[in-house]
Amino acid sequence: MEQETTAASNKKPTSSLPQPLDTTNQQPYKYILYDELESTYWNNKNNDNNNSTLPEDTLCWVLTSKGQRKSQRNKKKNLNDDDDNVEQDDKEEECHRTELFNRARVVYGEEEEEYKKEHRVLVRYPKGSTYHVRRCNLIPVLEPSITQDKIVLVVPETPQYRRLSAVHTCINESFLEIGCDFGPCVNRVRTVLEDVGFVAKLDEDLSLPEEEEEGDEKKEEKCVRCLGIDKSVTSLDIACKRYPNTSFSLEDALTKAGTSKLRSLCKRKLIDGYPSVVAVDINGNRELEHVLKCLECLMQPGDDVVVGEDWHLPRLIIVKSRFLYQYLKEV
Image: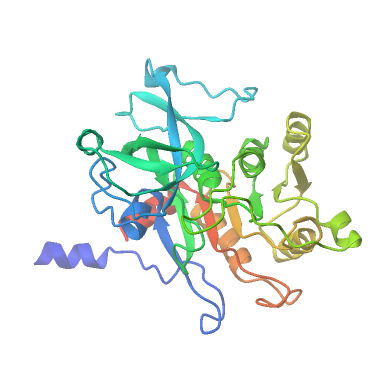
């Protein structure tokens, strides 16, 4: 009993985490660890990707193998490597590398026994073709229709952060990365949104919905889906040279004045006028205080905007922070 009391007293409060100021009129955020996302929204209680099932019409990313990994010690982080499509999980037990291949929707029909035994799921690709994919090679997408929750998704390491940013940003959404450094993550998301096909729901037409036409003045100003910001001039110079088709800007997201300037930039540059998905990487080892300050600035905009009218809070914030991840693990 004494041990249980001590453990309970050591629990850290979640009430100290940033939230919108007016939670009566603005929905509070749910803080979720990335490895608990499937158990929260797709009923995968044990994170068993072989035996768990996905509901029909679930939008997924299909993974494809990139071959055997020789050794975890041989992993290299090459900042000059332009092949950002290849993602590597940092789990020691993983013995192969995978990359994002394409989006598809789960289709259930008359499945042959051989596919069930192999834990395969029938999916439909953007152009209508179907294929049986191993369940372990499917990552369900947290598209807006899955939940009305506003979510802070917390990851500890760069590979998960970059992959999940690309996975969960959907067609016709705007994306902002805070702390883009040399630009690989925001460039990857931009490439995905431009190159990967729209996957209609089973009762919808396969063609991509047309976006609303805007006036010439708006078209000239709001021209991008993805935007990366950083406060390092050196990093942004490298990012602009490496990814000339991706938009970058020198901004500071850790101050009220800086975030006010950032919101003005988003209203001018992003097609939607605000980001639906925000990814935050202000150094995974940075103290928790600075990470929480950045989240507070995102969730509590100043008087320069009116939430619900000319500004909307992001539906999803993806944060790379080892300290916040560990903090939530201990809650």
